[in-house]
Image 1 (tube, helix red, strand yellow):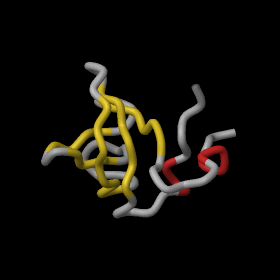
Image 2: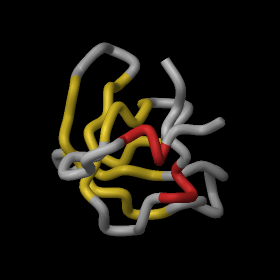
Image 3: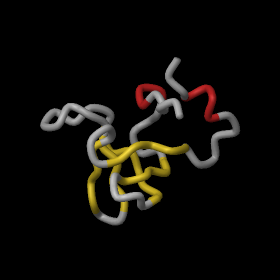
Amino acid sequence: MKRINTQRLNVGQQVTIRTRDGQKLSGILVDKCDWSVGCPVVEANGIKYGIGYQAEILSVPGQKANNELLKK
């Protein structure tokens, strides 16, 4: 599965993530590159997840073609 290019997302955009323990959650992209962890951060259920460490972005709800957001 290709990863979604977070640079093409907007802060405040809703995304669906999968945590390392397998949970699928809906959250909001709160930072594209957090200074303390150096990765995009998504907040879901009041918890902030570092993308690439604690979770991966699965999809962007409302996007007709997620292919445009995939890394090439």
